[in-house]
Figure: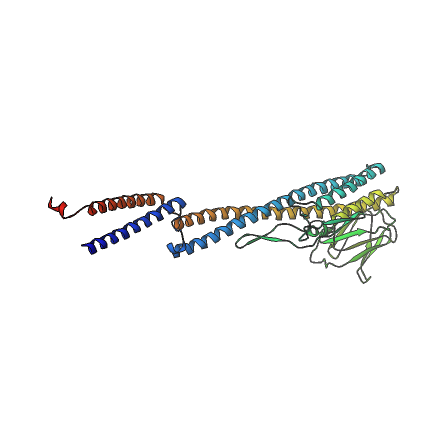
Length: 398
């Protein structure tokens, strides 16, 4: 009987300890809200949770990256808008300067404003973002982008872009270099550039310059030389005459698919140059325009020279405004892509969180019900043990 009683006690104690352990585990699950307390609880689910947690952390990092890039691009877009407004004002004042009703004093006042606009544009190009980085310095973000050099500016940044990952398979540039925004601006029409020589002594004014026959235009460099006020020769880069003709005020000269609209009367020896567009900085454009207005002198030939520079500058300013518009469009596209990525990442994060919760978190309703059942069972087991311990042969005989 003693052996049987001892075995019974040990069995009961083991049962109670198992119940107690189960109760403790449920209470810990309820307290932490987690079904999986350690990987051994459910190895497959635990491994999947680790995988999902990693994906969710990546989504969080991509979202954070997108926020940083959005901030930088928004700053750039604001600066580009300011630059565009400033250049539009410069263009309007250039048109006023070209007007015959604008006198010498008026042109000098416009020249002063041009100089001020040049400094304002330089300040925009050297702006910093909220993180203290130069917006238009490329990857040299701690280096001032442009350094004033006489009337123009020298670019001290680089022509690189920094790409930031805002999605698993998505990289977005967080800035544009000052080289592309302000420096490498096409001259003339963007395809061809024509200029009147600064040494001309006649009143020839160069108007519209356009490629009217793209097939015939060979992209070469040519010089139109007036051998007399009413006759000209077109020479190629090798100084060979490729065309000759007569000229009267208001005529257009067309050769190799290029048409030059002219007015005024040239002097013998006056020249025009024409060739493929190059590039120059918008600072050079404004500086050249300001210089022309500052140095303007009375006389029809001097006025023609000033008018030609103003005409050249208007073309170049149009190219600069186009470049600002192009870059703003690119920035807007990147901002839209970031917003779309952020929406996608938010949905992914919600989905991942739900899946993680389903694998790792405890079902409180089920857990509380199980705990209640275990506590009831434990109490019943303890009461039964107490009653059985009080039983003896004398109890039975009664």
